[in-house]
Structures are given as structure tokens and as C-alpha cells.
Image 1 (spheres, rainbow, N blue to C red):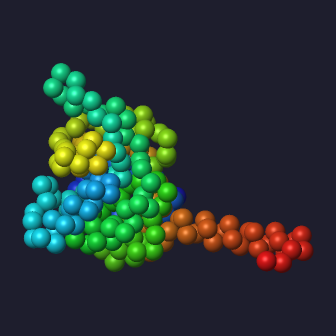
Image 2 (cartoon, rainbow, N blue to C red):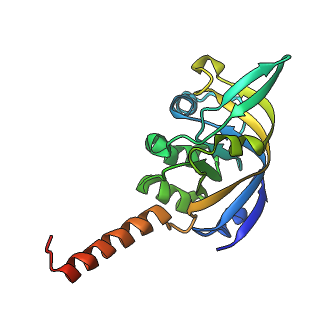
Image 3 (tube, rainbow, N blue to C red):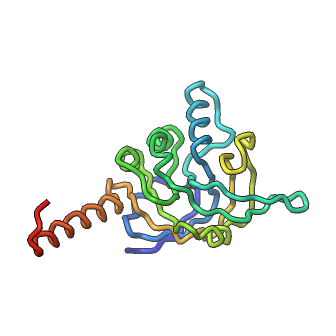
Length: 201
């Protein structure tokens, strides 16, 4: 397991050198998107509309931040990750159509996202749940916000970050998923324990 310092825009080569279990500190541009932003972006693509910003090579953060307006300047109060499985139905298309190289969230994602990461060159990284203030420390500036009509949590926020993290690679671009690996290990260990105590399932 290695530690990397990466800066957006990320290249395919940047993410291809990452393996599950590696940690990453990210600098550059980080864009938030939850359910509604995913749906709207994909609807834009379907209708041939251009997104308000290019996501090519960027990192996408599953997050509904709390942002305060202080003396006319937007300041992040908290920015913890939200559960990523809600976005699983959209994420493979998002990776394919918009060129996202890194997704950050919590809880992992499913097989469709794993396959899209492998096919198009992307990774999924986990950020510790409940660490909203730690996440805030890595956010240096709010560069902008799009689709604010969706509400603070669902809008697409554009952050400038510096050494945001650490985030842990839990789906790499080689088709490996730490979440699936842990689930298999747990299943095998349970089977072994049952055998040792003479139980059959």
C-alpha cells in the first residue's frame, strides 16, 4: 500500500498507478454531485446540452456540503461524504460520458461502477464518514456553484482543494474492489468458523 499526492486534472496514467488500499491526498479542483446533480447532468447530455463546466479529468465528491455566506464570500462549514450507493445507478454513465477520473464518497459502489472504472480509467476512493470537519480543512476556496436551484446539498459545488484527504482507493482501474474483497473474506471466515464448531448452513 502506497501513498500518493495527486493534482487535477488527473490523467488515465495517474489513476492506473493506484491500487486498492493506496491512500491519496488530492489537490486541484473537486466537484460535488449527489442524486439530483447526477440526474440533471445526464439529462443535459441526453438533450445535447453542454454542462456548465467540463468534468474531464476531475474528481467527483459525493457530498452535500454546508456552505455559509460570510461578508459576501462563500465559506465551507462542513463537507462530509454522503453514501455513494445512491449514485450507483448513474455513475457508470457519468464516468463514460464526462471523463471523471476519481470518485470520492463513503460506503462503496457496485459492479456497474467497478466495470466502468476498469473500462474508462477511473477509481473510487473512500473518505471517512463523520469526518466533515477534516474534509473542510482540505477545501481552500469555493470557486463557484452550479444548479443552486436544486438546493445547497444537491447543487454542484466547485471547490479548490489542497491535500484533501487522505482518501483510500477502494475500487481501482484494474477491476478490483476492496469492498467485494472484504465481503468475500468475511464469508469465507464465517464458513471456516462454522466448520470448526460443527455447524452447517
